[in-house]
Image (cartoon, one colour):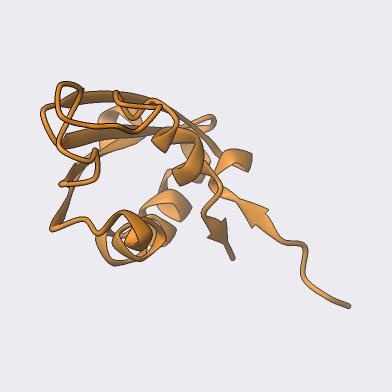
Length: 105
C-alpha cells in the first residue's frame, strides 16, 4: 500500500512577517502531540531547499517548545523588500502557504 502524502498544512498553521529582505515565518502545531514531527520534518535544510527558487542566503530556525511552535528567519527571499521589489507579493505573506505545502513523512 502506498503511503499517504501529507504536508505541514495537515499538522500546523503559519504566520508571516517581513522586514526588508527577510521573511519571518512561524509554524505552530495544531496539536501538541505533533510538535516532535514538526521539529523532525521542518528543518533548516529542508526549508532552504523548499525555498531554493527564491535563493535564500540563510535560514535560521528557532524552536519554541512551550508554544509547540518554531520560527524561521529566511534571508534574501523578498526580492529586496517592499520598497525595492517588483514582485506582486512584496510583503511575502504567501510564503507561509508555500512552506505549509512542504511534504512530510
